[in-house]
Length: 141
Figure 1 (tube, rainbow, N blue to C red):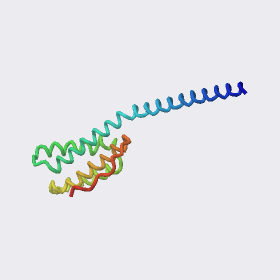
Figure 2: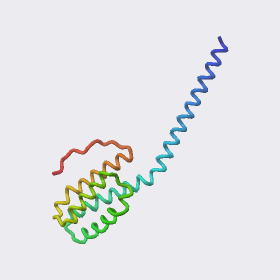
Figure 3: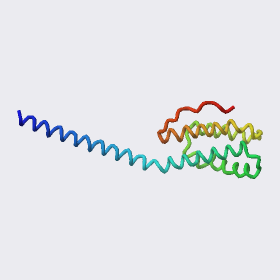
Figure 4: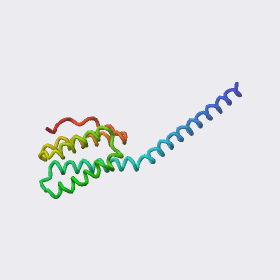
């Protein structure tokens, strides 16, 4: 009986040790995956923030020079960098904003589309980083 208990104890000890090793290996792999994705996620976040800022400037700035600069950079992001990191909702918001902007609408008509870009980017960034802040209440007109 004593021999059986010793054997059982050794098996439990080995199982616990192997389980610890497996958990350590899994944690290491998860950490390495995040480290590999981090540069992409950081660039995605930076471009989303920049795009949102530019759309807001186009929608709100009374300064023609600011709007001109913002418009030029917005076009660069639209046709290039942002397309690398965006998802479908961000793309749809960008297309809707650009359509309104290039139609020559009054700047106030760009406010709702600019907000759609910001909210779409928010959802993309939060989702990419695995953060759940819940939906935003619809407070803005």
